[in-house]
Each structure stands twice: as C-alpha cells, then as structure tokens.
Length: 345
Ligand SMILES: NC(=O)c1ccc[n+]([C@@H]2O[C@H](COP(=O)([O-])OP(=O)(O)OC[C@H]3O[C@@H](n4cnc5c(N)ncnc54)[C@H](OP(=O)(O)O)[C@@H]3O)[C@@H](O)[C@H]2O)c1
Image 1 (tube, rainbow, N blue to C red):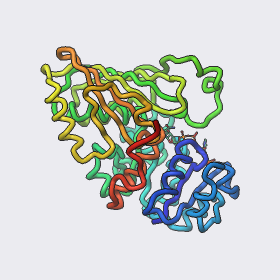
Image 2: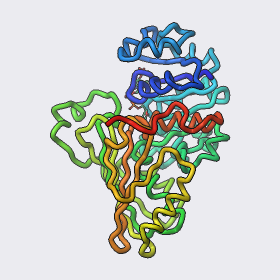
Image 3: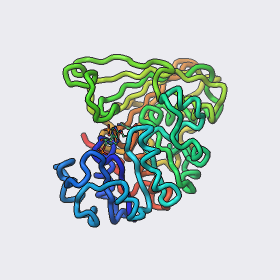
Image 4: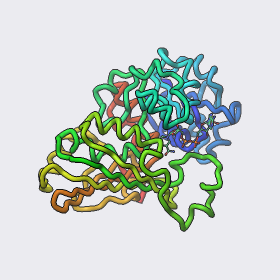
C-alpha cells in the first residue's frame, strides 16, 4: 500500500512517519514537506533517516512536493497540516485516495460553529456531510466505509472515550466537567513565547476555559450524539511535559452505580477495542501510556458523583496512532497492525 504524508516535519508528521516506516502493510511512503522539499528526510529526523529512506523509494529518501505525491496516486493520504491549510492542501487527493485528516477541517459539521472556533468557514464545507469522525472505538463501522476521515483532537479523544459509553447507556445527568492537562507538544512545533522552556518548565495553569477552547465544540457535538441533554464544560491546562494528556472528568449519574455496573458498561462498549483499557482500581497516569496507542480509563464514585480519569499519549492515540488505527480499519487490516499497545517505562 502507498501512503502519502503531508506536514512530515511537524510533531504529528514525524510520529506518523515513524509508525508508517514500521507498518507491515505500507510498502511505500510519499513524504511531503512544504518547508524542506528536496531535502533528505534524515535532515528532518536524524534518528531514523535510513529506515524512512528505505520506504521512500520513489524519492530516494527526499522530501517531496504535494504535486509529486499526488502524481504517485497513493492509496491513502494523511494530512498533519494545521487547520485551514489542511483541507486546501488535500485538494488533489479528494476522490482519488482515502484521506485521513489530522486537522480540525472536517471534524465539525456545523459551519457557523467551525467559523466561531477557527475564525474562517471550513475550506471544503461541501465535503463535510461525507466526513466520518475518526474516533475508532465509537465510529468503527462508519470508518470501514469512509473515504474522508476526520481524525479527532487529542483532548476530545481523552474526554469522549470515558464519557460516551455511559452517556449512550443513559447513565449521566446534567453537566459534564472535563479538566484536562496537556504536554506542550499538543500545541505543535510552533515558536511562540508562551511555549518557551523558561515559560513552561516549573509552571502550569489553565488556559482558554469553557467554550473558548477550539476543541470544546468538537467534544460537545460528539457527546450530544450520545445524549443531547448533557452539557459539557472544558478546562484545559498546560503542564511541563513533552507529551501526554490526563483528563479528570466530574459528572452526576442518574442513579448510584456500582463498580460492577460501570465495568460492565465499559466492557460492552470496548469489548473489541484493543487500545482502551479500564483500570478500576487505579487512577491511570500519563507514563502508563507514553509511547503507546492506548487510552487508559479509571473511575471513582461518591454517591451519584462520578469521577472519570483518562490518559493518552497526545501524539499517538491523540493524533498519529489513532490516524493509523483508522487506516487499518478502513483497509480491513488488523486494528493493531503497526501500532504499539505498550509504550515505554
Ligand atoms: N500535536 C498534537 O498533539 C496533535 C494532536 C491531534 C491533532 N493534531 C493536529 O495535527 C496537525 C499537525 O499538528 P502538529 O502538532 O504536528 O503541528 P506542527 O508540529 O506545528 O506541524 C505542522 C506542520 O505542517 C506543515 N505546514 C504546512 N503549512 C503550514 C503552515 N501554513 N503553517 C504551519 N505549518 C505548516 C509544516 O510541515 P512541513 O514544513 O514539513 O510541510 C509543519 O511542521 C494539526 O492540525 C493539529 O491540530 C495535533
């Protein structure tokens, strides 16, 4: 299978490149870079230059342009470009390759909500009706048939995996408060004073609370599909980690639930989900999942108040790993192909 990758030199792009290099079903990688076109891939990632070059046969290990990649007619194209730039850059691939977009350009099907969050109308609003939200555990059957997959944001993945099964079962009531902490790679490889080492080390705090964060509409839209009566409030925090997200969610349940009932709802929802693990006796931590494509979920009950805890690696289950998981599902491969369930210690 031929896979093209746009935005190769970004954090999500480099992570994707590494996964695709090891993926047994990917025979050729067409690695595109707008900033380093014509440069050897080893200049972008000295750690894995030869391995990547071996699968970049057509370009002999050189980063290429979008036009060159399109002319090779890839089976699948991943875009790890920023929102608004992504849908425009994908133009030559629509209708010709399966498109998996890691940006937000196809995640929100309400044009005015998208405009409010991202400042402009979605560049290809005409394609929104056919885009499938690529949260694999919740939309597996739709992903199987999709030619345009909108891979979810990292925060929404951490917020939705613990809440949607309970919401679908009608067990939640009222307001859902999502507090989440993210490592700095969640903001991408951009240079801004706020992301400098001196600003972020030994320092943490909330930012863009409530509806001010761009991921809030995406989470609200997906939760509403499960139970329209729920109202979600999002409080993101930046913490001094390179990668990882930990979400703590507080919500009321309709009635008091036992641990067995909670376990059984998750067991039903995630019976065939190799990358979700429930840890009822442990509050999971980011290092449990670092380097893996897994989301771990824990819970704690006090009467009808339920606390849910989820952790994931934002560059894997929150971005590139999940995108490859979608590719595996779409092309009828084993869902775990080329992806690691276990990370580093
Ligand atoms: N970081 C995460 O945890 C995460 C999680 C989920 C989803 N995402 C999404 O994945 C996409 C990539 O995120 P990222 O964190 O990898 O971002 P990043 O580190 O900033 O990389 C983005 C890459 O896109 C390319 N690019 C092309 N046009 C650009 C433009 N106009 N402005 C800036 N970059 C441009 C550049 O690569 P070339 O020069 O090689 O073309 C750049 O390195 C974003 O849409 C993001 O929202 C990221």
